[in-house]
Amino acid sequence: MWAIASSKEIRTLYQRNAVTSVLVADYSCQQTDWLFANWNRIHQDSDSTWHVCVPTTETRSGIGYGEFAKEHFNSNLSLRLGMMYGIPEPKYPCMVFDNYDPGSRQKYVSLDDYSDSQLAAFFRETSRTLRERRAKGNWGHKPDDIIREITRRERIRRNVTWATAERLFSLIMGFRG
Image 1 (cartoon, helix red, strand yellow):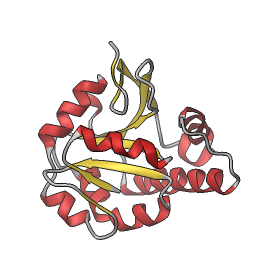
Image 2 (cartoon, helix red, strand yellow):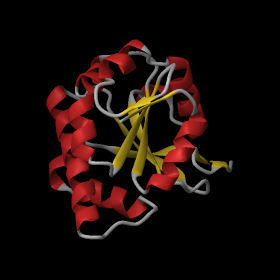
Image 3 (tube, rainbow, N blue to C red):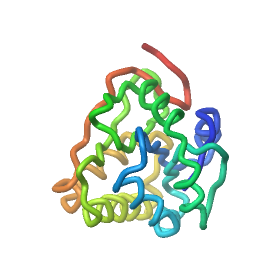
């Protein structure tokens, strides 16, 4: 997991050959508190296949920064990122999966009203899918096919509703419309 202080930092993750997602939230809530409390587990489970970016006032990455991210959560940056992607505020908090293509609308998962067990299932199953794909050598740099596979997994399909952002945009490559 990555505590990021600017959208430019997300662009550097493009070279790391991992799925990149961004937390968009307007304030700390049960779902973001759960994310911060489980920071270390999510970081370990994803095994460098998934970069979960959390807007904060200072940059940090790796194990042990969940409390830091909670204390330094930057709701202004998070809201700007949500507006850039075209995610309506009623869908916050959500995880946006950036596919590095500014000509497509990004997929996101609204985490609103998710219980702790639903959040755990989502992060566990997504991390497992990504680890399995990398182990099999079935890994593309663009995560569209990976995102489709994640949505097909029965365990998380029951708990997760995927939506599409309203704007053509990627933080990796810039704005298209």
